[in-house]
Image (tube, rainbow, N blue to C red; front, top):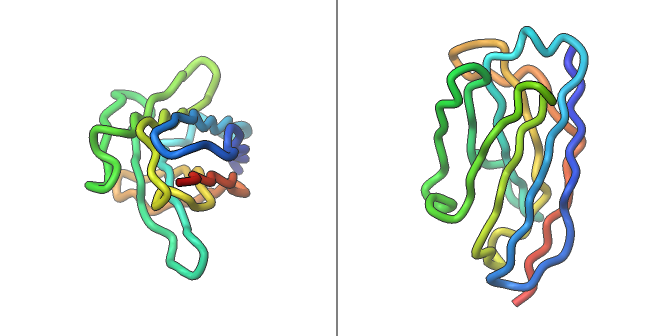
Length: 119
């Protein structure tokens, strides 16, 4: 099993920045990659960004490209999501996830952290 704990959410004004963290524990050696998703009220959960654990290869949703950066610290088993130039439409609960497979089927999820961007 892998446990994921997110932190770093909060309230920020439009144009501001936040950095989310996701600490993994347990059988972290089994992780192939980690990702961030978000879910706005009344909407489905959507992909935001992902990163492979070893090579650090990244991928982003079009809506966040150029504004968000995903990174990882292997020694700390932690993944970060640096969010800049935040917009009100970025308001959502952000979830961290982890996969053991190259097919990116996510096996583990965090509890979520709220990000609210005011206009």
